[in-house]
Structures are given as structure tokens and as C-alpha cells.
Length: 250
Image 1 (cartoon, rainbow, N blue to C red):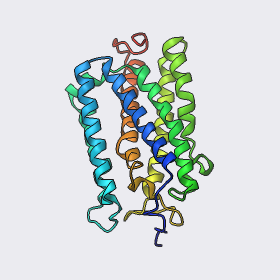
Image 2 (image 1 turned 60 degrees about the vertical axis):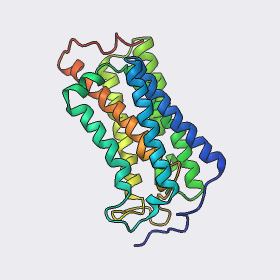
Image 3 (image 1 turned 90 degrees about the vertical axis):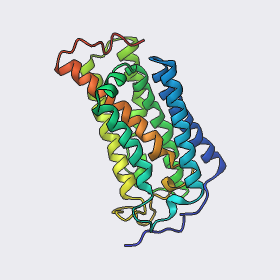
């Protein structure tokens, strides 16, 4: 079955573009804040690297690089491949783990609030025929709940200190599962060689600027936050680690 590509080069309204740019900057701001807690130098490096990466994606998307659907291998692999390699290097090396162990879990938890405006943006993109309905909360994507509950979880875990680490761990696992669910649906509905669903209204938004920043930056940042949080919380809950997890957060 061939996907409907009638909207592949259709632009979205300026307000929606602006809204998504704000979401991306909010994500970057939260990441910067988390790293700034441990090192101003590291925070500056993360900021510069992130801005360069966002600029590269913007230039490529603006030149329709990712809309060249017949390319082999698919150009979209660059979008998710490099961030995944970076995350793997951070969680698989001693130096990387030592660095991530210092990040404040409170900020990494609050980072998930960006999922609320992301879901609102996805619904708007569905209205403008840029993503399939299955990627919205009307189509079975309940990732918006992670964004709604993130500030509540953060408040009771770090401010009130009433939520035990195991409950924070459980929330992270559920939220990670929700994230992976929408990511899988987004990839399988994109007009790529491995598309399986959403042929009537494929996910063409992620091939354009600024929505290319969703798979290329926002999702990797949220994924990184979950992996970091889960690893540290699991060590605390199951291995009786002496490393501070909840009590050290402000």
C-alpha cells in the first residue's frame, strides 16, 4: 500500500510552527538547568552542542533533505541515530555514568512536563493532516498523562518527600513505556521503507522543520532522562545503594 503524500510539502500555520519552537526551547532549557546544577562548564557545552545539532537538523529539513524518501539508506536514520549513539555512550561508559549520576532527578522528572504541549502540538498536526490520528490522545496515545503527572510526581517526591523511590521508579517505567509506544507508532506511520500503519494520513510532520526536532532532540532528551532516572532509582531500590537519590534533591 502506498502512503498518501499529498501533504508532504504542505506548510503548517505560523502559530503552530512558533508553538513547536517554544516547546523545543523549553526542552533545551530544562536540559540546561539539569546540567547547570552540577557544572556551569558542562552546561555551556551541552547548550552549544544542542544548538549546533538543532541548527544542522533545521538546515537539512529546510532543504527537504529528509523528504527525499527514496534515499538509501533513509536520511531519517541520521535524525535518531546520532542521539541514540550519544545516549548509549553516556550509559555504557564509566565516565558517562559518573556524569549522569550527578544530574538532579527532580529536574529530570519535571522535564517530562514538555510532553503536555507536545501532545497538544501533535493533535494540531493531526488537524492539519500532518500526522495520523493514532499519534494523538484521541487515537490511543496517552502520553499526555506523563506530562500531566510529572509536576505532581516531582512535588511529592522531592518537595514533600512523601513518595518513596520505588514509586518514582514505577512512574518512570510506565512513562518510558508510554514514550516508546508513541515513538514506535510515529516511526511505523512515517512514509519510510518500513512503514506499516497510517497510510491514509502518514506521519509527514517529522520530516519537516521544526517538527524534525521532535525525534531528533525532544524525544532523545526525554528518553535520556528516563534511562538515567531508572538506572539510579533501580540501584537505590534493589541494590540498597548508599548513593543519595531523593534526599539530595532540592
